[in-house]
Length: 293
Image (cartoon, rainbow, N blue to C red; front, side, top):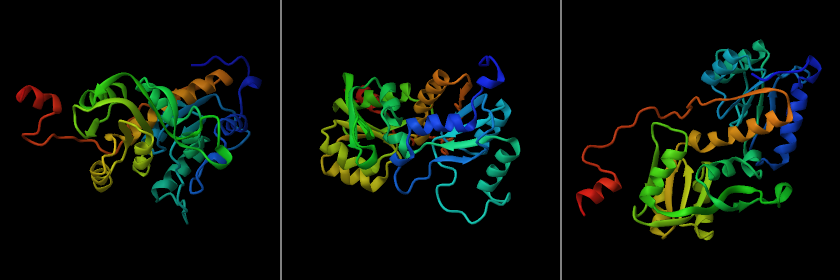
């Protein structure tokens, strides 16, 4: 736990939010996004923070159990308009619990995706990528200084796609689903594009950028099939939560450096897929190689 010299040195919600807004300006968010302070008293002191990917009942339990004064979440709780926050609704229950407990909630979503460093930089760092550049350079208010969505870089050592999938599974936070890949397992990958979160809208960008492979989350059957049929880069599909969890460490480190606060990072896996069973008779690429030399 952080040691706070005196009460006057404890920052307020307003001060922490100001620092986060400076690092991830709200103007950098996509027009459809909802970021910034969701709830909380501006003058409430913040001695402990919990960083999470998703603000869900389980992470709220974690925050309240840890005595957090502020939750920093990547995904917005109130992304779409609601007509009620009654306590018999999923989001209403969360809002009421946080207000009763005096816990503020702040969201940095696509503005954190666009930032440099941002969500995809943290993902790229887990994979030891070098020479990073934006996969989709930012325009408008966020343009310049290496900002944009996704990143593309070079692996320290070229790896066959099958080995790269295993490497990614070992380096990223563990989930039941792990990592799956689409393409020739023996394809040698040197240049890798990555995107934290859902990334199939950037399949063509990865192809134009000259990536050998592209790693992201939430890939769908038809876009993948058509992408590969057009000779697009090989693909690696990871859990949404696992692709964004690394960014929380960066947020925590920066807050600790700026304020005398105790910053915790949630490792609670909020990926909704909790069971994985391999089909009978299906082997991994390495098994196939051993079986059919």
